Length: 321
Ligand code: NAD
Ligand code: SER
Image (cartoon, rainbow, N blue to C red; front, side, top):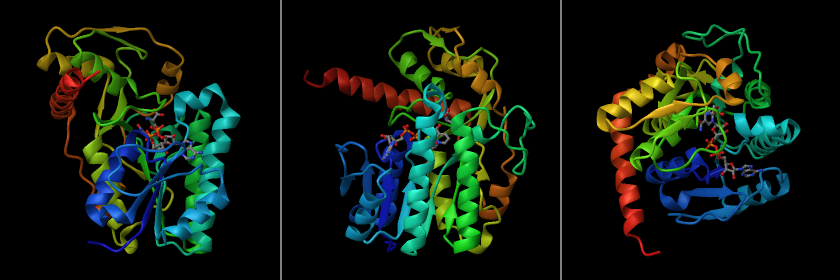
């Protein structure tokens, strides 16, 4: 077992819920402290309530648990952020500064901060978007991620804080529900299909976006964090790719398993956000530096999602009311 004491901020979210369990497998349950705004239930290790805007509370937790690494997942995502841009900016940036400062002051070993494909805007190459590309995002979420990436790089260069980051594409998983993103349709659609319901998609049929299955995302995150520091050439945030598909392609993939499934389309404000993002991502820097390789393609993900969700919904149906 490796000897680190890890704090996860935003552990109750879509990615945090899964990452917490994965890190506990690697580092031991007692060495991974999960935290979120509200108490977390069904936890297999220590857990705390933490508002990441409260720097003093964060410092107290870091001291209490002798924290050596922080995974800072708390953020307001793209679609929710557009409803109140200043609120989203404040949460995304203040929480990140609190984490970077405590890491600097207490010489933490490592910090993880996820960025996003939302850093790109319409001026960026739409296909195979390069690692180093013009960054003119069109959401407050994307602006906060560009700023965050640059602050991460600044803390690394100026203070030697070992901050590492991935630009996640849309993340799809069966374990947890997404929290207000533009790629959420690609999770919701599997829940509808499992319940034998048709799905009305909030993006157009031909909107192609980069996506990644949760097991690949979690493995990639841990692989980046365990990579030797001298292998990492990118200290803003690494492009990361898994697959790219449109709503009509994911529906066709589901129909291979559930031929009766139907999709309809009613684009809303999230269409403009999706239109500003890349269709596919060049992740050759991650492949070169720390040997990143995704394992799941669309059909493999569909089979796995539908199998797990079928079991989940069957268990729910049998549970006492
Ligand atoms: P999520 O919305 O599901 O979870 C975020 C969690 O942060 C929530 O549990 C929320 O309660 C918590 N939180 C919010 N404000 C907080 C605060 N002030 N203090 C403490 N906790 C707070 O998000 P997610 O999908 O799990 O995303 C995690 C990270 O990954 C985010 O930084 C997000 O930008 C990034 N990311 C996610 C995706 C994706 O597709 N899910 C894609 C790209 C990047
Ligand atoms: N999945 C995220 C979103 O849609 C991308 O960062 O906001």
